[in-house]
Length: 197
Image (cartoon, rainbow, N blue to C red):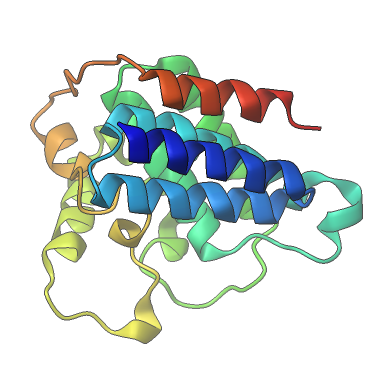
């Protein structure tokens, strides 16, 4: 627990020294990936921290001053789709709707339009939770061992990474029954994020 406390205290200090939303988003994204790999946080805690990262990311492309310099990327669209699916798994319908709306918003500001397995039909994938054919497509991509770098990014390269195959769970008509307890250090992190200027 000591390393978790230290890691979160260090992250909080880093966030306080940064004032760019994109940098804060990146710091949180990296923290989530590392903390999940080290099993320092639960999937639910990672989801909550990732939600804060997405909020900073959204600031980056919706604030007038930054909009001219930062359009959205395919990765951003994938992250929003993944967050919507995770919200459904955690049975948080209000957040699922928010992620859906943010996905629609971000899709309007996509910087690069090129052939991509999700971008080509993003609106359908964004609503795939009740579409077995599209959930199966996502599952097939996840199952591929060899994938072309040029055809990425891939949805399992973003949160929840390989820690949760939401397509499989949704295809089975199930939801996550994970404990939603938040550890004290993660609660402190979430509180400090809310207090940032």
